[in-house]
Length: 201
Image 1 (cartoon, one colour):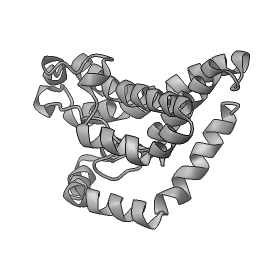
Image 2 (cartoon, rainbow, N blue to C red):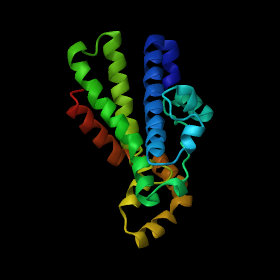
Image 3 (cartoon, rainbow, N blue to C red):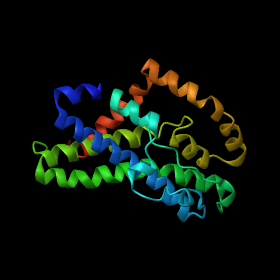
């Protein structure tokens, strides 16, 4: 668990926490920024269109981040009524988070090629890349409340979209089942490893 690093390798612990905070903040900021761009000012009025981590970190998610090495940010609210094309734009808002994580990972991987991973800066870049890839891939799982659920919904025709959205209330239970049974690793871990290899890590 991440908390064990605090006592065993405090410097590494701080680097990992910083990488996680940045990854989550980038993810939530991107949701907010795209929602604002598409015409809904809900996130902006709540002060969420910012890279300041304090606007995006969830208390429970942050505690779990420290104790277990995983966590989540505060979901960015948006009002579909304010969107020009609610189905499509909701999918774009959802896609913005994972996409921003994967883009940041790709950009930082360029710098890692020059500094390596043995220095403090290199280690920080490595952890940031790693967690951005993990966050990006994991959130694309098509299960509510993850972003992938809305992304898939945006790709479906109207009749199938309405049926798909009816599964939303049960998504959290299905997600917990996938996590507890380790089923997510079957798909997520190979994809994460592939992307990290592609990025030269």
